[in-house]
Amino acid sequence: MLTRLLTGAASLALTAGIASADYSLTILHTNDFHARFEPISKYDSGCSAEDNGEGKCFGGSARLVTALADARARTNNSILVDGGDQFQGTLFYTYYKGKLAAEMMNKMGYDAMTVGNHEFDDGPEVLRGFMDAVNFPVLMSNADVSGEELLVGKLAKSTVIERGGEKLGLIGLTPQDTDELASPGPNIIFTDPVNAVQGEVDKLTEMGVNKIIVLSHSGYVVDQAVAAGTTGVDVIVGGHSNSLLSNTNERADGPYPTMVGTTAIVQAYAYGKFLGELNVSFNDAGEITEAKGEPLVIDGSVAEDSATKARIAEAAAPLEEVRNKVVANAADAIEGDRAICRIQECQMGNLVADAMLARVMDQGVEIAIANSGGLRASIDAGDVTMGEVLTVLPFQNTLSTFRVSGEVLVAALENGVSQVEEVKGRFPQVAGISFSFDASAKVGARVSDVMVGGAAIDAAKVYGVVSNNYVRNGGDGYKMFRDAQDAYDFGPDVADVLAEYLAAQGPYGPYLDGRITTK
Image 1 (cartoon, rainbow, N blue to C red):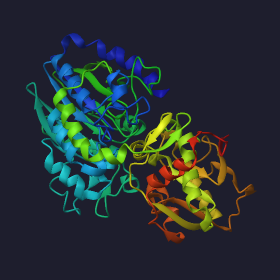
Image 2 (image 1 turned 90 degrees about the horizontal axis):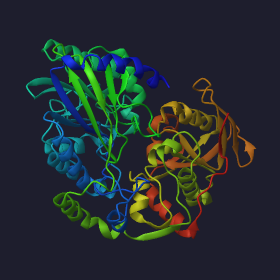
Image 3 (image 1 turned 90 degrees about the vertical axis):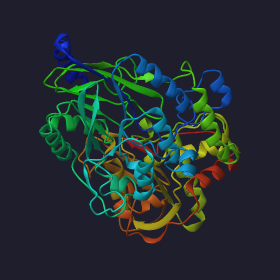
Image 4 (image 1 turned 30 degrees about the horizontal axis):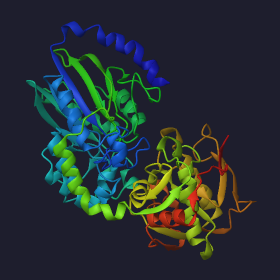
């Protein structure tokens, strides 16, 4: 892949100058934590106390506190930063919004974070409350917030901190399509990431800052484009694509760090499973002379900090009754990994789409479309709790029914596969409809063989569709649904629909049936 080709020569050039380096910095980093304050399973969903006691679980705030203390003990000069999306993903966020995230991040001593798209899930109000509660700057360079009174004068594009006697410039970056991915409201204008970053680099350089780190919640592909399209960026700490960059893990999306020119790009998967640890050395001119490291897996071998564990247990108490209720049973593990569900038919996608369609089929609805970005975890075999269901579908989206033409449906499917190379959440999981797509074809002309009820789709016919209110209102690029006929966005919570559907199935057997194929 491109990144691996870029790495070899660049890394050789970097290590050659290590002897002259006079400033070393350890960058500790997390991204896409998504309210996983408690340990998680290998499926990124809840992990039982029994399994945790047996060392089978990963992550959780209590382990992260220990891992951070150990990492800081290995260096005399470090910073801790976050690549965005602390919000959303478990009942903790549903109940506390950003308050518990702020408390834990203050406890861990973060130096800065960037705004992720999910930080806007409940509008600027909740983001502002979070920013008021944290002891560090929250940054976003590629947006004009001058029209949003809650953020103007509060949300900075960049900042300068001092560490080890040197000034470090930190720049924030968020997805340019955040207006489609979340609910930032009408008053924020998101802009091009390359131009935004370069503008802040130039300002920082004029201030005499020559060590510049971008905290980017824009994805691995965009990060590489930003590195290639700008000058003066030394390190990009990424997020959004949940990419595992590693030199040892066989499932890695690229090397750690990925070098594009002289810019080192890092990212550490998601959900607190890893703590990124990048060791960087700079010469007097602020040029990187060495960049090396590896994400540290936060597995059962990492002890849980007892005070933090007790605090999370205290915070979990109000949630217990809801999430521990057993609502169904799974005969086998139900695959919901984003790396699969965002590029092809997947078991969780079929389950959720089937559940949505079954709920409203008696209303003349014949097609279900679920955005893969709404599917946040797998479910393991055995008893399924409401907590697990809410981890899969944490967004409190409601069932939405509407009517559109076959032509609009095809346009929707084209939107769904338009960014499959970037593993984006708009990828459609479906029921009642099948289609093929060719990812190598031109965007807008990738979809073919669309069938509804065993017959080829009729461009002029009007079909009944079910999705969620987020998609129906244009989320994930589905703007063609905004003007749908007979739209009703106020159905039951999709998580409740899924729980009830699973309960009615007996032990549910996950499956694939070829409803989405590739060419």
